[in-house]
Amino acid sequence: MNQDNPSSSTPPPGSTFTIHFDSKEQNKLQLQTAKLWYNNAYYTGDVPSNSILNFGGSGTKEYPHWHFTAYVSLAYSWENTPSWQNFTKFDLPGVHMAQHSLGGVPPHTDGWEQYQLAGLFANVNFKATKLNMNSVQFEPVQVEAFVPSLVFALSKNTTLQQVSLIGTSPLVNTSPIELYLQAEFPNIKFAFTTPT
Image 1 (spheres, one colour):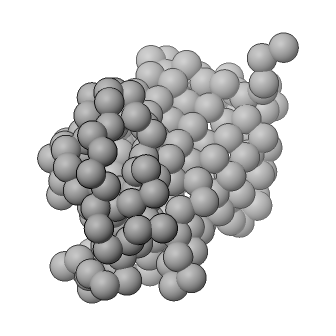
Image 2 (cartoon, rainbow, N blue to C red; image 1 turned 90 degrees about the horizontal axis):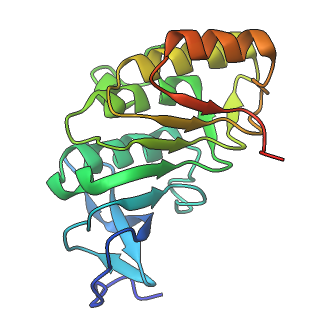
């Protein structure tokens, strides 16, 4: 992996990027900077249109992908990098996510509400229309915690059109929850089970 030299390739529209945390650079929150990773190197150029940001499996030893600070650093970079508004799909497949990372409860650090996912979803730089939360491992593993936090986060957003919740833990593919979410967000198409 070439962590020191940025990628020289120019990604086409619709490219998929991941996140790596740069141990040599801190953002203004004193956290390792969340940087785009493309073609086995850091990517420092503008994000092309209709791109995908895949956060699944991103992270480092210091900032595992499930840790609160990883979400904070990701949100900080997204909110402060204008071209990231070109991400039209946000993938979070199989990530671990605590309630204070999603929103609806206070974060660990005062003043960091804007860097919860709910805060990111409300930011003007967040233009994604598709959100993939398939196989998300939510803590605590309780529908009573996950669903209100999800509703709180989605209520902050005006751009999402599709949200996939297949195989989440806890599972939300029960008729009452499906009907509730669809009633709360009539402009969002939800997926709860794999199409047959």
